[in-house]
Length: 240
Length: 156
Image (cartoon, rainbow over all chains, first blue to last red; front, side, top):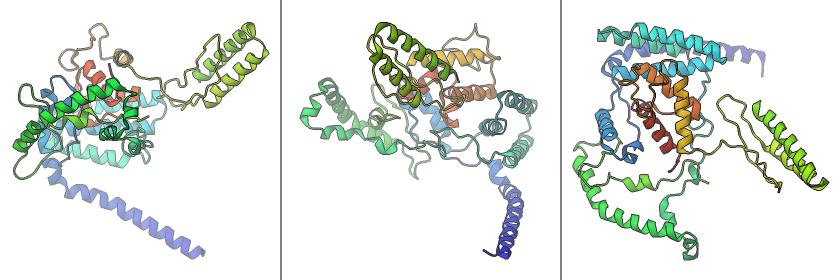
């Protein structure tokens, strides 16, 4: 390519960077109202802990408190703190240096934690978010299994649903007689409770549509939580 | 790293024991097997991964087996030990008062920011992320152990 083209490209890139830098604060200005109300957040899908617990009500109910999908001020502050610490960890790779700056950050959060004026607190949170945006790491450390990580959904293609077990040949099933006998009992239980689960879901779904993907816990005594089968028979995290 | 030192100690041990007990052939087999283990002993080198590839010292028979790098398998007891160990290392927690069911806010007098730090320490310890929505609900060590066992499919 000709040298003139290179300089034109460089100029275009510099202009783009300049405009991008000036656009970002404007976005924050415009979304102040949305920020003050509470930016809506989609609740995560079926929380495993809501069904796995023996006393499943507590977590299911707390999930339902979040059914609106809006975060409280405290939750926003905690999320900012966590992601600030993670990006700080990406910047300060030596552990003692990171520890020092983490303590400084914690002191900054602590000195303002008793603010009672919510408007001022929200403005502080907003400025904190902007500061985070300005100082974030370009390639922060992301855990392998979390979204954006190296092994995110790597094993999804090997996760076989449980209904494939029904298609095994009888000679294969004879290799695990205890398991398949127990499986038949579980399937009977599923068939019995299916209608009640569906009825509960139909009753509890709001008329104008769902607000969250979180499933409600079992309400009646002796009832199983709705759609428990697909949780109980979920494939392993690392399928063999 | 520590695992290489360990591998060298084990290799010298197996070589010595193999030489004492068996003849030349087994020595060569032991050397080859441990060389294989060292070759396939994949250590990520980062401070987050634990020691990998348990090196089996099985006497009298030294097996030629391929070993892949992986973390040691988790059990509920090991998870609980590690969680309590990490919590005892945290300087805002009194180790004497710490039990499996002690609530962070009510019993141990911690802050929500401290709880975030604790959850981050757990993430670093076990090597996977705990999403915010589920992390803010984990208030006792027992809950943390249960959550990790749920996520990692650890039974009993």
